[in-house]
Image (tube, rainbow, N blue to C red; front, side, top):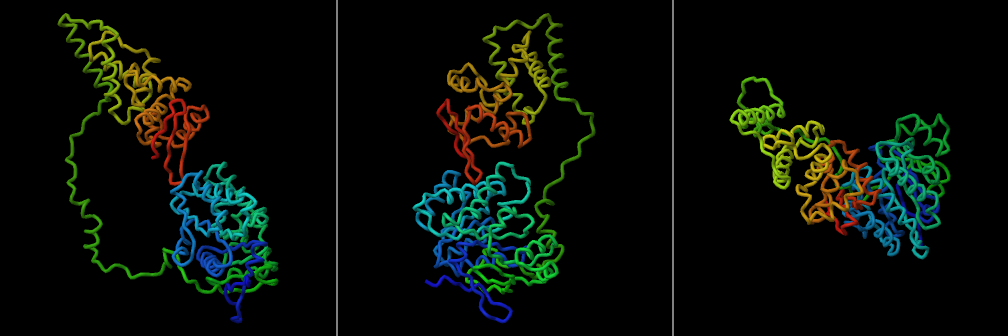
Length: 484
């Protein structure tokens, strides 16, 4: 079988071929700035070799999903699957030799890296009897094998880099041939780039990238300027699968195109300025401005409540009716009512503990209780339970929940109770904002650390899919929230 495909033409108009059989053994690195034609090159390579070899495309921007309209590729939308499901799909891809495009465009960068790491590792770990030859194309490879740490967590970055290193360094013996494309060589990990033996270098402008490209092509430094002058869709090729000497290649046309198409100039809308203003601001201008209110000196809410309570107590004392001692059993409705009223304020959970206890004390005095029924430590626990949705801990239906919460410190009680209550009621998992209100923080980082800590303590088990939907299980209850 002829394994040679035409990738384009050289300066003289002669066809330039790529030997797919050789490419599988020696791997490919494509480099070029944004707009240089990297994606077009990869599309041409995939189209020409579609009938020769199994193809697996890691597609962070969703550019290659249109191949499925013309060829036999299957699109895997990674956001629809969990980590376990992505690994299972990858194993089946190797077993059944299916050509697929793994579309990551619905995920953020950290999720893309995590998904790619799991998927590539599953390809790599396939049983020996499934080591069929496959061309693994990774676009924007600098995202998955960065040369330096970025905004993503170190755990995700190391996992993604290790998976890419396995693909390029050890994948050949397992039938996996990496073909990776990057905007900048300087941003791509050197141990990943160094494993490629075939190169297609497109236009780039930074000296450091031109120097590295020239070194890989075996060109002298003074010849590196030629890389800056390359036109869109023109590349310099070298390698055992392409040419033994650097050759200029103009990439040929393709039968498919990206969904976004090519961005080009369009005529501006012809609407008159006044019509455009109407379209932009019509609904805003119809809203009546709020009536100005007379200036007044603001009074803090707790001061106002305290004034009302003190006035009412003074009136009772003046009338000869001092506050009566109330039985402990009868104070419970007062406590529940006070906590419910406090939590009606959405900002209540973020107030200092001393302020909250003072507010609670004033509310109890307003109900003519001679003594505040809870000390500070008792209030802290009751308020935490109330933030989680449990206002009456004596209710028998919360007994197992409270037993499961006993291993956690009081400050983590509220978010755990919120999660456990959702599991008991079969409701959706509380999102980070809800957990933040329960924990008393607006920091997403603190919420992540909180969830990680509770999971390490064995109090919860977190399951997330790549679409961002999270469900949390409570092992001691044998229940789990719905995905959210």
